[in-house]
Length: 151
Image (cartoon, rainbow, N blue to C red; front, side, top):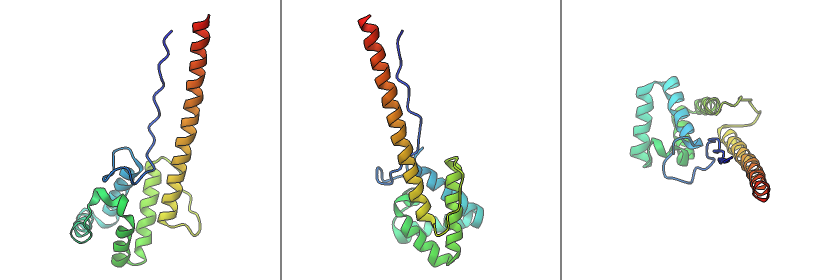
């Protein structure tokens, strides 16, 4: 009986440094989608596009580069919306958790970047656990094959 290797479950990448752009299925791409949706919901599509246009002209990065330039993005939001930028940040992180299919729990003292770091940590932990599990399963399959070949 031939055993097939079990494919890994897709899990968002924790990296914001692998590529110049957010790649599909990564935490970065989910973050860009979350930012898009929240800006559209709170400010409207035209205002969202105006923000992206302003960023491109004045900060030399575009929408796809947002994950690598979050501090600049939030500086702009803070200068533009003042304390309202925290509301926008909270809405973005809640949307991101929703996309990850995680329950969002507010933690006193946590702000956008704290939650984002917690998400990266959780994903890294899940990737490690998945790798350990897959390694155990692979070792078990190898042992089974060795037993079958000896028999």
